[in-house]
Amino acid sequence: MFGQVLNYDVYHLALYLLAALAWGVLGVRFLLHDTTAKGLIKCFAMLGVAMVINLVMLMLDIWRVLEHYQVEFLLMMLGGLLPGGLMLIWKVSCLSGRKFPI
Image 1 (cartoon, rainbow, N blue to C red):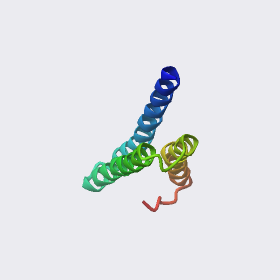
Image 2 (image 1 turned 180 degrees about the vertical axis):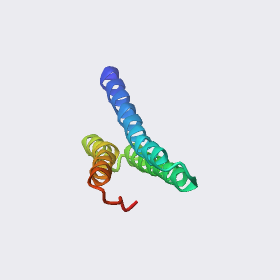
Image 3 (image 1 turned 90 degrees about the horizontal axis):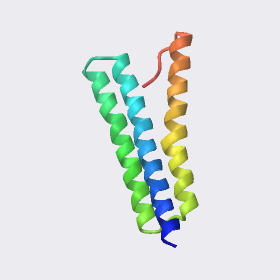
């Protein structure tokens, strides 16, 4: 029993950390692309999005509103695939010469 709970907690901690890192990388890419105050605001906004997503998911997980597999799925979608998809869209728009709307 203790081993299963510990494994679940470590796995979820890693998912929360990866979600924050993915949004943080997106923010740093905005900052590297635009080194003005506007780029800094975008960087902090991406970090704020990461914190809000992690906070909401953590509260839903603690209060047992969602099952474990639902929390894992949402963390992977909102914390991994969404910022990864936004990075790919931004990269393609930069390569094609069109301006990214954000």
